[in-house]
Image (tube, rainbow over all chains, first blue to last red; front, side, top):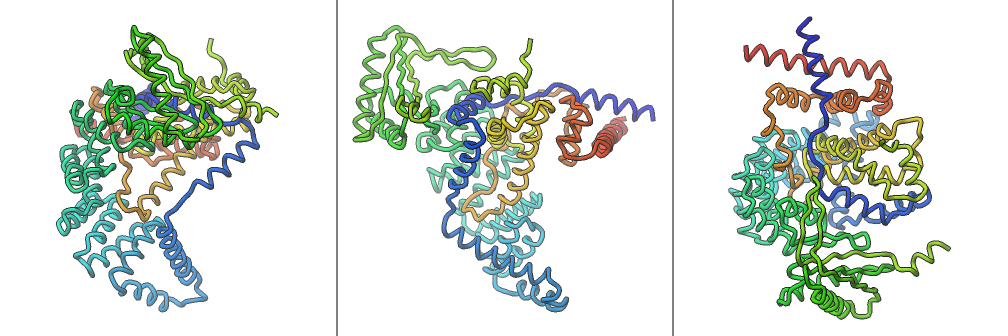
Length: 375
Length: 186
C-alpha cells in the first residue's frame, strides 16, 4: 500500500514535469504566413471552408475503383446486415463464394476491406490472392501493407521481400522496406533499400528524400547535406520540399531558402539565382513559372551584399529584368531594394546568422486590391 | 507581466493578427507534443499543429472567456489528432501507387531517450506510450498542463467522475509497471 502511494506520488511528479522537445524552426513563420493571408470573420470562415472542398482532385481511375469497391461493399453490407434478405446459409454461401473467386477479385476485395478499416478480414482475402497467384509482386506488396496495418512487422517485411525476390525493381516494396527499417531505427538497412530504389529510378522523390533523412539520422551530416541538395534540385514544391529546407537550415546550410509568396511556398536556390551560370536560367524560369500564377500582389526583391551596395543594386535590377522577361505579358509589379550589408537571419535560441550575399523575396497586396476590398 | 490570453484574443479579433503569434509561441510546444504522441512523426506533427492553429484562428470568434483559452485550443488539437489517427489508419489502405507510410518517422532531435539518463523516466515514458490514447492524454492534460478535473472532463467530453476514474486507472497502470520493473531489477 505504502509502495503504491509512493509510486503514485513519483508518477504524478514525473507527469508534471515540463514539456520537452522542440518544434520545427519554421512552424510559427509558416502559420503566421498563412494567417497573414486569411480574412477574419464568420462569413469568411465559411467561405474558406467551402473553398477548401474544391481542392480535392482525385484521379479518375482511383475514383472509379473506389466507387466500384464502395458499391460492392454497400451491396454486400445490405445483404449481410439485413437478415430478411439472406438466411444464415445464404450468407455463408455468399462469403464463401467470394473466397473461391480468382486472385484478382480476392486482391481487390482485400484492398477494399483494408480501405474500409477491416484489417483482419482484408488479410484473409489478400492471403488468398497470394496463394492463388504467388508470382504477382503487387499481391505480395498489398499483403505486406495489410500486415503493417495490423502491426505484424514480420509478416509485413516477409511479403515485401518476397515481392522484390520476384521482381528486384519493384519499387513500391523496396520503398516500403526502406520505411519499415526506418521506423524501427535500422537506418543502415533503410539506407540500403532507398539506394536500391535510386539505382533503378535515380529521381524517385520518395527515395531521395528519405535517403537524405536516413543519412541525417545516421549522423552523416555531410552526406545528408548533399542528399537533401539532390532532392531539392528537382523537387521544389510541397511540404517535403519545405521539410528538406528545414533540415538544411538545421544543418547550417542556408543556400536553399523557402519564401511564402502570395500564399504559396516557393523554394529557391539562392547561389544559383544570384550567379551568372547557365543553371541560373533554369532557376529564373522556375521562379517565373510560379510568379505567373499570382495576381493582385507585387513582388519585392531585397538584395544584400556585404560592403557593396552598388553591386547589390546592380544584381537586383538585373534579376528583376530577367524575371520580367520571363513573365511575358503577365502584369506583376516587381519592387527592388538593396543594401550593402549582410542579411541577418535570426535563429531560435537567440543566435543570428549573417549571409554576405543574399536575397529576400516577399509579396504584398497591391493598392488596387486593398482599395477594392475596403469598399 | 504576461498578457492574459483573453486580451490577446480580443486584440486579434479587432484586427491585430500579429498578436496571434503570442498565442502560438505559448502553446505550440504543447500542441506539437500532443501531435507527436499520435503521429510519432515530426512532419505530420508539424502539419497538424499548423492545422490546429489555423483552425483556432478561423474559429476565434467562437471562443468564450468562460473557458481558459488553452483548454479550448487543446480541445481543437485533440479532435484534430483523433481525426488524423482515424484517417491515417484508413489512409494506409488507399489505392496509392507507392508507399502508404508517412515518410519521416524520427529525427535526431527527438531521440530524447539517448539523452535521458533517468532509467525510471525511460520506463515511465514507455509505459505511458502504451496506455490507451485517451487515458494517456487525460493524464498529461491533468498533470502536465495542470488542468482541473472539470476542465479535463470538458475537453474529453466526459463526466467528472469518469475523468477521475480514468486518471486513477492510468496512475495505477503506470504504478504497476514501475513496481514490476523494480521487482525484476531487485
